[in-house]
Structure formats: C-alpha cells, structure tokens
Amino acid sequence: MGLLLLVRHGQASFGADDYDVLSDVGWEQGRLLGGWLRDTDVAPGAVVRGGMRRHRETADAAGWTAAETDAGWDEFDHLSVVEAYPDRPSGDLDRREFQRVFELATARWSGGTHDPEYAEPWPAFRDRVRASFAAAVARTGSGETTVVVSSGGPIAAVCADLVDPEADDAAYARLWSRLNTVLVNAAVTRVVVGGTGARLLTFNEHPHLPAEHVTYR
Image (cartoon, rainbow, N blue to C red):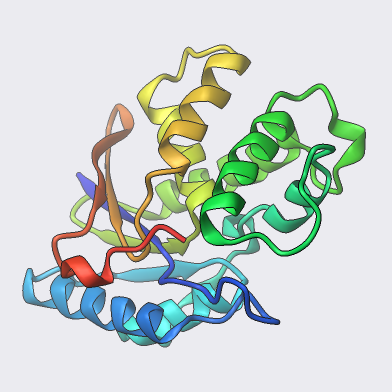
C-alpha cells in the first residue's frame, strides 16, 4: 500500500496586513513537523503543496524545498466568505469572535443555497479538492509516500468524503464543518492507498508539537 500524508500549514498571521504569511510560531511548527517525520523514517517520494504562501513557507520550514504546486489544494477564500455573511459584526474581530462568525459564515456557504453570492461556490470548492486528491492518490503507488501541504478546508473536505462517502449534501457539510474547526496547524492526517482505493488511517496527528505550539488559527 501507499501512504498519503495531508499536512495542514503552520500558523498564519491572524490580524496582520497579509494573513498569508507564517507567524514565528508557524515557522517553528513547520520545522518541528519536518524533524519529526525524518526522525520516524518518513521519506516522501513526492511533496505537493497548494499555491498559497503559507503552504510554500510550511514546506520550506519542513525541509521540502522542491515541492510541486497544485493550486487545487488552496484554501477557500475564508475572508470573503466571512464578509458575505449578512450578520457579521462591524469592525475588527478578535480571535474568539472571528471564530464564532467564521463557523456561521461557512455553514451558510456550505449550505449551497446562496451560491451566486460567492466567487467560489461550495460545489466548485468540493470539485477542485476532489480532483486534486484523486491526482495525489494516483501518484502514490505501493510502498510510496506522498506529502501534501494544504489548509484546513481542503483536508477536512477529503476526510469528510473518506469517513462517509455515502453522505448526502447536508450531512457532508456538517461533517466537513466538524472536522475543519478542530484541525491543528502543522498536523498530519494519514491516508492509505491500496487496491480498494483510499482509506483514512489517522486524523489530525500532532505529537511533534509541544502544548505552547498547538494552535488552530
């Protein structure tokens, strides 16, 4: 069997002018991740990352400077999804309030009844992530390891499909939301690839992170 590791990027820069930059903690999370995988004899034959800066910087911090780019692994535009939420409070939001609004806004987006209001509707997001996941699975042969550096949204979307491939749209969206809100920065999710397809092995591993480096946003 092959092994596909889905890695969430390190902590980005919440509240900064450019969110898409790793914080100092994010860089350290990436270094800890790369060291842990090397210490456990994980040697990826290929590394794929999304096209966002935080994906590239996480791969660089982990020591994967030759990573290939697949923009299908990019995060959805969470800021525009939050901005489109009609009951969003005005002004800057602290982390706790932003998380509350984020969960309400993404529930509205993933509900699929307001698609024309979004630059990337929920079904389009699902389709592009599924296509990139299928490509990653196809390249992961028996005995091979592929690493994908992505974001919480795409990783949760893949896991929701793997946990319940028969879920209807509403159940899938609820499962995605549950998974997305608990993903830790620089955590690893393992997917085994065999003759019967891809199966979820572990979710959200982060033993390489000391307590002070466990972050969710």
